[in-house]
Image 1 (tube, rainbow, N blue to C red):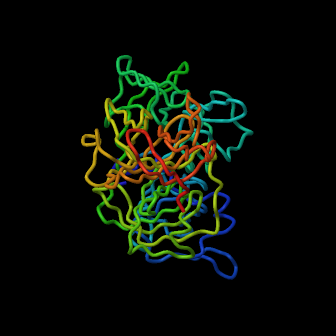
Image 2: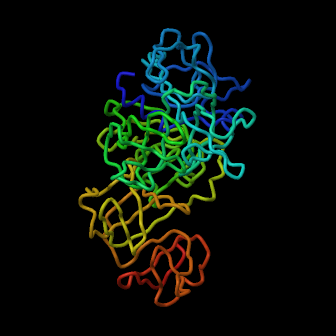
Length: 438
């Protein structure tokens, strides 16, 4: 590609058509009497997605049959040919509006397989749709696919790595960061970054991409990228297809495949659905323009596919408002920790440098391990706050939600339930009059 950072980030984003679902149903824009794809014209400048067909002179991505006989092809930054592109690979295609000019492929993972209780993962990311007939514990694999939750990925392409000295690539969320030893973990994979070039700031919860070599169960990093910002031309027209993994309260921001932020405004057009259909698990196709300053896509049109992917029940959406404390890369509300990453959107002029002590609303996704923030906004009206999450019992057997307790016991009726509530804020971590938000 024209910019190396585009290539490196494409493998992390892993945007795609959905392997089984889209093969079965197809895009409504390409349906015809014999259910075959038709050649595309007036192509977007950039198309990111899964290869569903390839010939000697064309490639099919996101239901576009794209003339590609004269396109430059790169695989992991190295010159290649169209013959090297395989079905299932996630690719980034640049076009001149009528045909492909450049095709770039980078795998999401090149790393060691780990098997725990019949579940297969790489760097703590659980792999589904994996062909289980050709792998074993510790074996090196190349994986391409799309994320649909914080810690899971659906495999669309896999291939064993036969050269144990190959440079590998993994990605995930940092835990157990030790800046003195210069180590951290991605899932159960120990990363040693003593000799690595670091791009960005490392912190627990930060999503990173790591390149390096694996030996004796230690991954020795040569590069660690914590920035992961795309360098597209501003306002370039882009098309992507994927699974919604987050929707904010006012439906102005969604996340696709746990990585790509898409903003929605009054000018966004909808096909085969409305904003009411913007739900987690829904498969959509987005046409929009890239906003370089905000590192997100402004949606001009959203087309709803007839497919809805069952969301991973270990990941839920949350919303919490309150006074945030921010110190040493850790944000807390009522003593509960929240993590930011390179995809977190800060609204209202906020940043990590201006966050401490502010009344804010945090929205994002959570599981048993972490609360990952997708959007941060200033909270102007503190008399009533929105709280979304699991109501549980604290050490004093009081019902609590994100550290709040209700002085009138209005939270008790929702104990052990995941709910969306409106509550009146009283003081500190006390609320009252909590009711379901309709």
